[in-house]
Amino acid sequence: MRAQIIDDISELRELRIAGSIQFVERADGSVGGLHFVCPCGCGNESYLPLRGTGHSHEWDWDGNWDAPTLTPSIFNTGMPCRWHGWLRAGEWQSC
Ligand SMILES: [Zn+2]
Image (cartoon, rainbow, N blue to C red):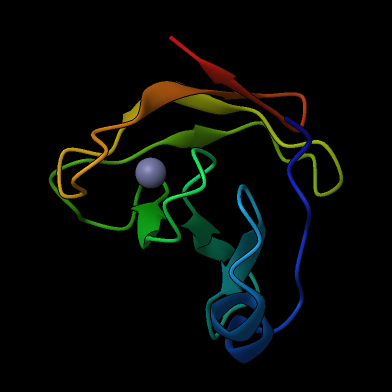
C-alpha cells in the first residue's frame, strides 16, 4: 500500500486515510518523527520518533520525503490490530 503524505496533522486526524503519514519538523528544521495512520485500516494513529530524539524506540529515516523508508520494522503493539510491517520506499508492507 502506498503511503500518502499529509502536510497537516489535523487533516491526517480528520481524514484517517489508512497508511497516511505526516512529517513532524522540529524548531531547527530537522524532522523529529512521523505521525501515521495504521495501514491495516483500523484507523488508529501512532508516532514514530527518529533517531537522535531521545526516545527509547527510534527509527532511521532515509531522508526521502516522497517515498520514505524507515528502519527497523514497525510493530503496532499499542493498537488492538497489532499490525507489524515495514515502510519501504513509500510502500507499507505487512510482515
Ligand atoms: Zn491497525
